[in-house]
Image (cartoon, rainbow, N blue to C red; front, top):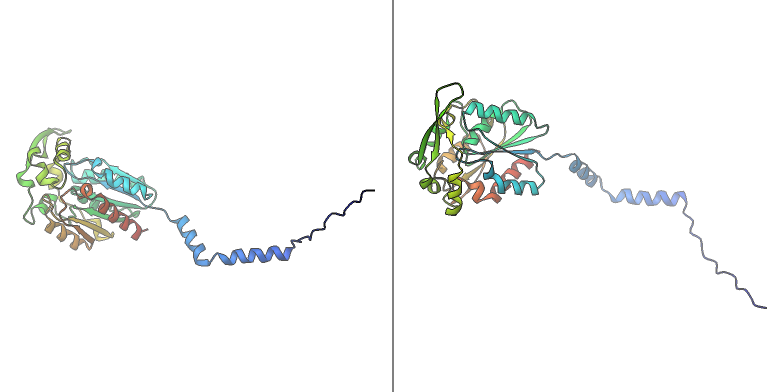
Length: 282
């Protein structure tokens, strides 16, 4: 008769409650308090919205490369269409945009846009930093025109052409454009001529009223600020930029050889400064 072998008996592993508790204790110990706190902070930290404000003779597309870099880094971005009509109205418009943003904000202004952010940030507790990119940072009572003539070297006074336009309430205003033949030298000398020809054709004029309106009390007196100096700027001389940056107590860096549109020719440096301001105040 065939014989039947008994099945090989295997040892049984008994998972008891004490064993489970011991394993859980090891896993909990592996996560340090500092690591847990860091993870919690990362979850709670909200990146500020970066609001970019262009200046005269440009439009929001001048921020395109900077926007791309900021978005890759995870920052929400709004590039506003600055009206360029008058400082009080332009600032009120920007202020209305800031009012719709629920979280922290970093305001960034280029050229005349610096005067706009200086006035628009007042009264907004969610504005955590001001960043000036080759920009005007006027004190109370100063205008962009005042500051542009404070130091020698600007080519704008001899490069502008003007056109009259009708005002809604009657009368006329005066718009300033950069003469296309002088646009590259005065505004964007470190960009290819092909690009500056397009920029000259699509430039947004600024009214002389906007450039000549005195500033109110500037927000940079109460809000931390950063400043990027364009070292070879032929629109706002570098000396004027350094003067405004030091007066504002801004954390300042300079790009040697950069033209007025440093945010286009050096978008990497510009985005890095904005990111530094955002990190320092969040």
